[in-house]
Length: 227
Image (cartoon, rainbow, N blue to C red; front, side, top):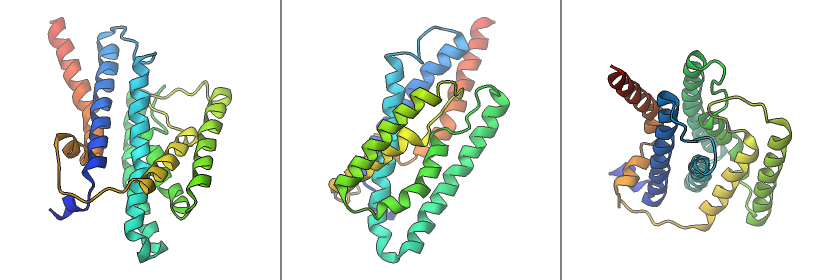
């Protein structure tokens, strides 16, 4: 009960929506790869689902970070650094596992800086921005990062080959925008919950397990069909 009271069901619900969108998109990707069905998962409009899901996840990272910061900032900079540092290490270790696994499975397209890598680094980089109080200048900075990121990608990152790639630019700009929204919206604490919120509370676990389950299930299905 204590854990539920320390959460905001609205954020967990939004994260649950992102989880379901992620599972749907990865299901379509796996179907295309395993059954060789030309769904067009890396083309418009389906790729918009992937970008919308990623944007929501990263936006919520910024929102959650600023809400947590407001709770612990009075305890001092050391506690703030300790909290975000521990969280960054936890996510970073799982990111390393994903890199290792995908390197052996897909050496030409392994994940070297996917969304978990990005989140891990962002949780460290975000700390000084949490003390940045002026929302207007922070908004300008976030938008600038996004614009620079798109320009940088168009010029220098055309040949990146990875199953999952989230560079700091433009995506850290989305984190900044999420921070701003986290300061604007004031959620009331509540133990209210729902199916999506329950999923959202287990987002990291589901992220780590859903692809092995989807891939394994579809691969077994293909073997049965081909018999």
